[in-house]
Image (cartoon, rainbow, N blue to C red; front, side):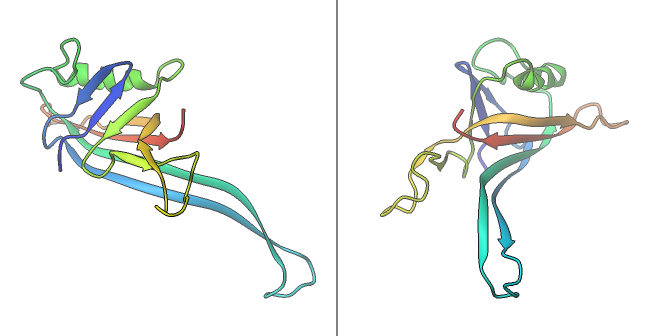
Length: 154
């Protein structure tokens, strides 16, 4: 797997090769079925559709970098990488563009599953939903993390 990147405000953060153990993508449709009373189990069903949500979960560990992880500034230590990633969720979030081997594009929110190509694809734009780290005793050279991004239009 190629090292994933996160781009925001013209600055690109590239994870160390091997730091990200997995990039998991989940698409969740949210239909809400409702039956009309007294129609039986195969009666008239109505669906209230709440939409579709896509989440991307990155998990791995932060390690000391030989060169800066960002296209601007000096982000090499585990602490500075953690602080940079935490800052993605502070205040009014800016749009994050994620790129990895299979997360370079997502279905366009505007066109959806339009024929004939099934779907139109655009850059995977998302926002930070959660970033957590798990500092462990006896392992000062690795900081396990999980990052959850929610895909949307911005």
